[in-house]
Amino acid sequence: MSGIKHIFSKEIARVFKDKKMLFSVFLLPVLIMVVIMSIVNHLVGSMMDDIEDHKPIVYIQNEPESFESFLKMGKFKYEVKEIATGEDKSKAQGEILDGSADLIVEFPKDFEERIENYKAGDEIPQVKTYYNPSEDYSKAAYSEISEGTLEAYRQALLSQRVGNLDQITVCLL
Image (cartoon, rainbow, N blue to C red; front, side):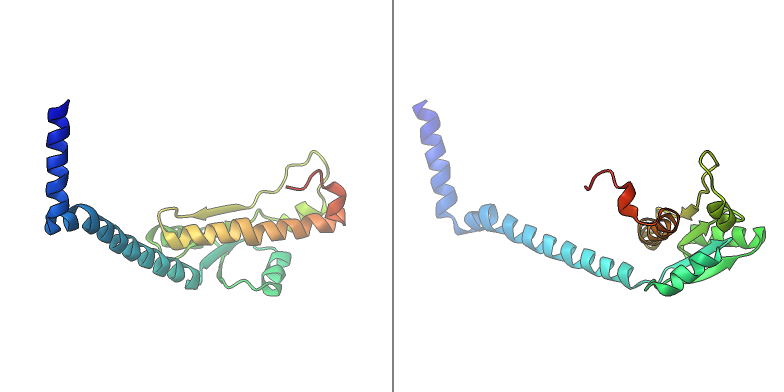
């Protein structure tokens, strides 16, 4: 056991006496990590700024008038294009795939009628969204519009039907 202790103390003394060894073992790895993390932080920050500054291009099919007025009332900054035909939809899907457009929002035909005439047991109208998860702009537009704009629109439609939404609140999370 004394042989191991003697070898260990000799090697540690050699590390601490040599300035180059001290620098390369203790300081250099820390400096490299700080530089790498600074570069990564800067690149991620600039990427996030770029995504936030991007104005999403959104195609909407069968857009109800209430949603159009809802978008105009809000502070939403989207470039909205209409899909009128199946040919337009194919073109929009191609643009989603190549990254020149960000999102397709498809409302069912006669959406507003189905909402107004809804009775318990009827099929619930579903708004479909299509995006490209491999594109950062498309992913950001999807999350902003699905979780933000469309959810706010759903809440507005629900409050029109129910009145005060606090009446149906079960619990607060």
